[in-house]
Length: 315
Length: 148
Image 1 (cartoon, one colour):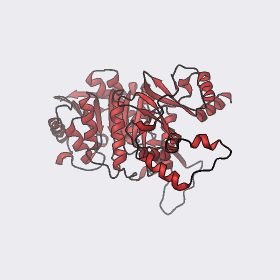
Image 2: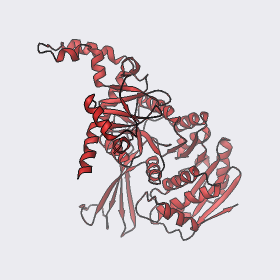
Image 3: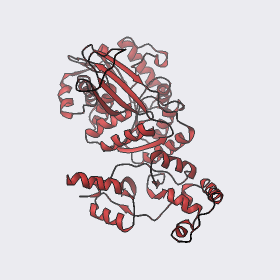
Image 4: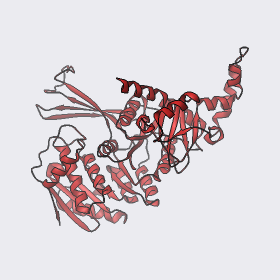
């Protein structure tokens, strides 16, 4: 079983509104569509992998009415649910897509605060399911009041049991997590920050940052960086550096790009494919997602077809 | 139709050392009556629910309540008894002997067990480990969906 950890899941609401304007009433109807989906990075990956036929479980904190809706959606997907219920409500993340004017407006809540007893309960339950987990995917932000070394602790525990981990997050929880030595690191660089005080402007910047990350812990096998807007994709696997590019990479939507990429990587990993194939599948899955307005288009035929557009060169 | 078709894949559980006060919080937050108990390898040990907590606080309560002359204990007494229980941990009071199902069991077998033993929730086990639950209500809604 693959275990996904999403400490701060969300109910994602997507409004498709043409000509979205402030100071105006937008009534939902035939022309305005809304969809609600389970969200949070780890949950997106779980949905993706589950649709590709893998055995996946979802862990994290949920609460209140929104938490129960989320749990039911996860359950309907036939994902194994293993959530800790907390006192306050799971957050709602709203996005307004205006295709006509090509704008995206996002309103993200911060999520419920998590208290020590819930964290203790989570850690205990996490240790309990490690026996049955072949791989742990740790993704997304941490909720308010959560210790910033929580991902590092999860990685430490998994390493002691020789279970592989993938870390996809940002900022301090990422830096502390990297030091604990996850198997694969995929820094979330969507918002501007300097990981380990390093710049990330050019290809060379990414390459030296990848090397710096490897130097933090010898357990780190792979580091992946993506910057779709610059068509820049870099992976370093042990001491080899690969530059990956996508032919005709038309971007419709960057929602869930990283989650699809993680899903693709994991899918190929479980099939024990060679390194370059794993990277190709990951980028192809992200690319398929990028072409469509909706997230989580996990169709293996599309991914396989997209692979031919991915070029990988060792540099 | 088999248990695997009607179960829901929920492996939420508590450990034997979870304290009762916290257990009650979890049950209330999740709107549940029962919670599976599992050990450090996620092997299923039994079930614990609100009824076990009440029974433990007032062992005679269930027997007395069916007696026509039953006078409820004073609320002070009830609160005092519950105070004692809330300092206990799951392993002190959970139900070790419970019925379980396998994914390959027939749905009819699950239905019989639920009716005969008056169970609302049964754990589904694979190699001693908890893999899901069968709920009476979910079962019924599944049957109704099938008949449409």
